[in-house]
Length: 248
Image (cartoon, rainbow, N blue to C red; front, side):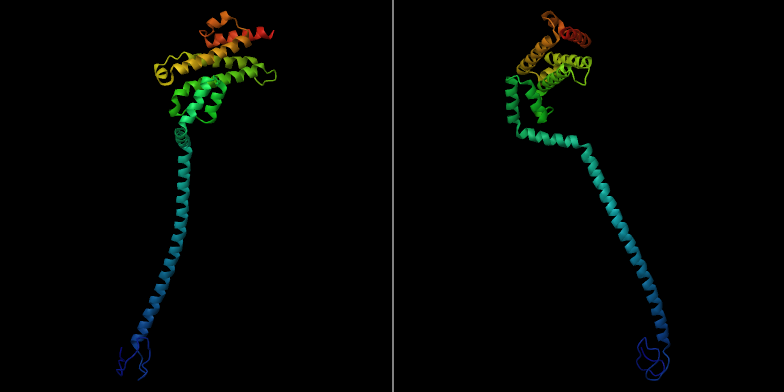
């Protein structure tokens, strides 16, 4: 810009003309405006920085909360679907070793190894695999026999925590269950789970169990002829009476 007095060039911030010494009125206004602008700029800058810090802190907290919520949601999904996930994993395992599992089960069925079959299927978690449906009833009958032997052990153990009448009640219930497997009434179950091999296995298991019942409870041939047709309550009474007589 030029000096209003002498016409020489002046800087915008020169308050006095270096040539004529005249006051530069534009410089004062410019300096005042710049000072005002700087104050406003600095104030705005501090506000922006403060807001940025607050926003950053809020964003971090929000991100952390979002991650925690996501982790909790995933945990809930896994927790409530753990059975399905584990079942799917086990089904893949069964598929890979299906021939091996079938061969082992068939061998134990042929050997009439009831307790080993129950243990093998339970330990390997094959009991409810859809790929081994043909052994579903075989396993359940074997499991009932396994429980039968356990309650017989309680009954014969003088130091058992279980009362005799409680053990006999459970034995009567298990016998009722075995007879149900030996004589199914559901057409759906017969079609899905039964074949000649399964019938033969369960018939042998049931006959074996009846031999033990006859011996331990002192039942006669006549008693055993009608035993299957009795109600569960009547079976229990007959077992209690027989056990009391044998005990004497």
